Image (cartoon, rainbow, N blue to C red; front, side, top):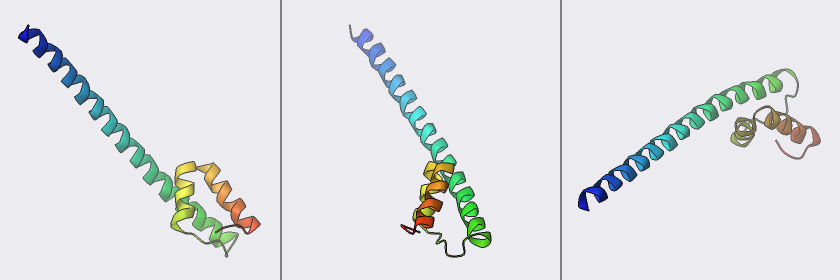
Length: 87
């Protein structure tokens, strides 16, 4: 009986370790994607500021919105600035 409990505990421990490893790798992948999006979003906002709207303010919030939402966030930041509501 002890031997069977040991196998079940080992199986559960392996499942927990695999789950935690997958969660960690998913988090790393998401962090890398977020970092790449923030760099691209910053340069896109900078290009708009340099060539179109010199009054556009590039802040951590505007870059964060673009990083999380992508092209939709970029459009949202531009619309908010265009209407004079933010940024």
